[in-house]
Amino acid sequence: MSDEEKIVSLSGARNKAKASKESSSEKDEKRPEPVYCSFCGRPNTQVIKMIEGPGVNICSECTMIAVQYLIMEDKMPSGEAQAILDSFWNKAR
Image (cartoon, rainbow, N blue to C red; front, side, top):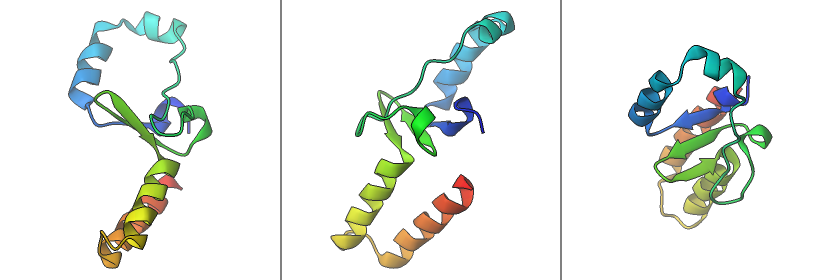
């Protein structure tokens, strides 16, 4: 999996419009810059997945910490949390 494939964008419409403006030759010559997690600061090259949102990014590891926190604080039903964890780890493999 390439570093670029590790990034999941939640602002897909903006990214598609931006990508269509670039020519294919520019894409080949230009190496994509890393995307950094807004919480821990790690780049997408050092994590399993990166979720890119409007003005904020979160890596898979920080997402897991957040989900585990919600489970421990009983803020989320454990069945729902387990489904999220199972879905995440099945897609990450």
